[in-house]
Each structure stands twice: as structure tokens, then as C-alpha cells.
Image (cartoon, rainbow, N blue to C red; front, top):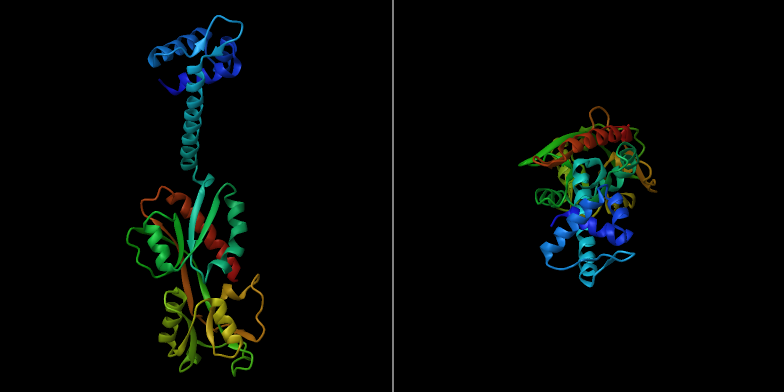
Length: 299
């Protein structure tokens, strides 16, 4: 028994005529008849009533036909799956991204990714960095956008771009009227930060260590939006990644954003994937496009 024999049976059931079924299968009528007879001999039952004006399937033939069509559909599914892997741009890409980047980067880059990869379906998964790395290693994600540095054990990384931070202060703050600040001016100041687990917290702490600033005790925000509104409400100052301050994000009343002079504090973003992934070539192209689009968004 082989798939071709099942195709012959399906074609005969559809056309009810040996010659027309053979023509539909691009074989001679004797070939089709011979193969169907061999199939009957192998199964030990008669599948086709012969000799009448119209070809009919026996009861056994109808029962076998139902399963044969399911097998043929399954085989076609296998071909489609294989085609998707032979043509990676026509598949679903499971892409992880962390919460303090996803909502602010994606509006800038998704249209350009769709233009460059029109058949690629991007399924976004938003989680904290530790969870993204765990899922990436487990094969539950194809790639993840993270802020470096992270451990690259078994992973490849393609740098994307550097996203600068801006200083966010309440409208009534002493720095609110400034057009720019220098990083050393943070020395001795307290910053509101996110709770444990957010990579933005770790990045802000690095800035604190470099500039002499410190975390404000007794407060840790659960999200970037909470942090934004706490600053606008006068609770303190913080660092915001620049993409979280650009349209389509609406301006926040009572919040003043001040860029840094010179070399601003920043975070370095990269696309990670498993070293043995068959999607490596595609992901390098995706990374190159993401990098270009991200740099354009922060200009």
C-alpha cells in the first residue's frame, strides 16, 4: 500500500469512471486498474464494483475511502509543514520581548518587518527577561529581544541598537526647566525604580552606580506606566528609555523629559536565538531589519 494507490482510489470515487480517473492521475487506465487490483489483493477485500455502466465502490471500498482521504490530507499537511521549514519566511516566528520595550518598540518596527517579510507571521510573547531566556532555551520561543549583557550559553546574539535614557522629572522640579542635563548631575539624587525582575531596574541601578545616584527607599513600581505617573504626580524622578517617550505614546501631563548631554546612559538591545536553530539565517536578516528600524525610531 502506498499513497499513490490511495490517490487512485480517491480519484475513481470522484469520477466514477476508470478512464477519467486515470486521466486525472496522469497515468494510463491499465496502470490505474492494475494498482487498484493489487491494493484489493493486499487488503483481501473487493473495493470496486466493476462491469456496470458506472463504477461503484463496495461497502468496504467506501469505508477504506474515508480513511484514505484522511491519510491523503495528512500527507498534504506534512508537505505544507516541510515547505514552511524550507521557506522560513512563510512561517510563524515566536518572538519574545520584555515589557519595558515591547509596547514602545513594536509600533515603530512591525510595519517595516511586514514590508520586508510579507509572509512571516510574528507571534509576540511579552515576559521578563529571565522567563524569555528560559523559554528560548526550552524551544518555546524562536528568538527574543533582550537588553545585554545576558549569559549566552548555547545562544547566538545579533546587536540591534543602543536606546538612550532621558531624565523624567515632575513639572515643579528644580530641573524641570532645563533643556539638558549631564550624567554627573545625578550624583546624590534618588531615583524611583521598578521592582525586582525588570531588566530596566538593573540598567537604572548601573546608571546609579556610575553617577552616584541611588534608589529611593520604600518604593518600587510594578510597571513603566506606574513609574511614569508616579513621577508626574510629584513622587520623584526616574530614568525612562527614549522609545517610551515617543509617539504613539501620548505626553503625560505634569511630566518633563530632559535629554542628557554628551554620551547619554543607554541600554544595548540584541536579538538572541539558539545556536543550532535552523532559522539562523532568517533571524540574522530579521535582526538587521530590526536594528535599522530601531535606530530610525530613536533619531
